[in-house]
Length: 327
Image 1: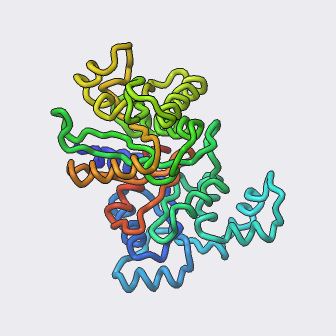
Image 2: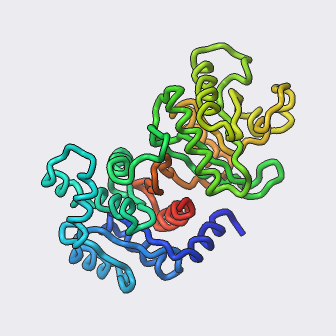
């Protein structure tokens, strides 16, 4: 069974609900239908009911068994507005207008336990999805930096078929500080625990391996390692490593002499900045024939996920299944 098939089967056994704020999009409607028909998830489409129904009719897609909620007309609007205002110095009328927005209403559904996850981004920019997530679901305890990861499935890695890796951060934080890099590493390890078949082993990547080069960028990576060990001493994390030392046992053994639970066997790769992370995942995808699934958002109190604006129906269904695996 492929990695993706495993997540699909897990989702079918759990009867979870995903809210899809961009309910009028053709791909979202088709994905909701497929998820319902295949038993992957119950989908809630947000938006104007008449427009969604008209669009579905034009597509020849039935909506039986799929819930449609217009945030502006919802009986939950008052409850969600009150919850959104709580603890904030915010005018209730302003809050109500915010919560009427599908991204915010969807986030409040997750925050209030009326949906297990939110998947959005086929129409909204990533920054809007993140902002809505921060203001509704909120960040996980101890995390101050939302980030992203890709689940990379390598077709043949060192004799292992369909080998999964987590790459982070490849879509959100351009030049993370050591503290932000530590947040990314901790959140990625947590994502790995939910998604990888093996225990996460986190490598902080660099152009240097254990002091082979001296530069402020290397210092940042090492500062992040110190911070992670202070905050989460039980994590299997090490660095700074060059990529080959992180994932190839023979290379790691040559370059790193001190004991390490990670060197040569990392499956969670933390890139020092967005340049390196974004370039690496695209090169892996197109030159190694890897399946790149994501980007997924992480660091939130509950699972939400971003979608590429070019996402296909297959992408939306796969992203939803993996997002729900983090519940």
